[in-house]
Length: 207
Image 1 (cartoon, one colour):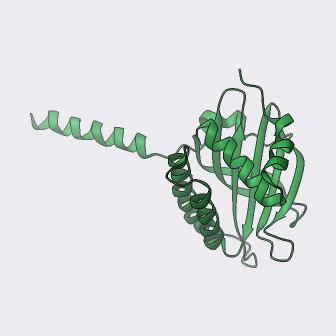
Image 2: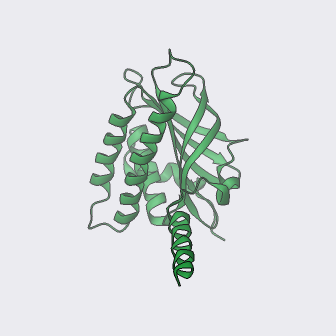
């Protein structure tokens, strides 16, 4: 009986570990492959005077990607700014609120992980912490990915050359597409109709 209980306890631990283990993108490797990315439009955020990163509108095969490359000495503060915007854009009364809540939770966890990478950096002269946020729309599903990137170039000419995914998950079409519109609108200083017009010919056709 005791042996049976021990086996059951071990199985329960294995199940809990599997549920809690982060998805680092294995299932979505093809959607995350940045080789051959075509950058259609980019902008330094929040401004060239106080740069913290770059937002890029990307065509990745048959995918549409809005990628935020963060390179900031105050990454945790940047995450709090994103959190504030998410709370304003996705209140509890709006469909997509729960998706936004998960995104914000994952963002703070990824920020902590990015900090650990920063602490272990070899180049001690580098004062910035790095994180890449991808909202990816495909013909059959939409995902969000948070990764620690390798970036070349400086603000205004940043290029992602590699990344280590921290968390990747599938999210609702409504939230991913809605947030892409919000990000493009906010980052490029467009009104909503202009942002929607920019994105309209780029949305992948649904299977």
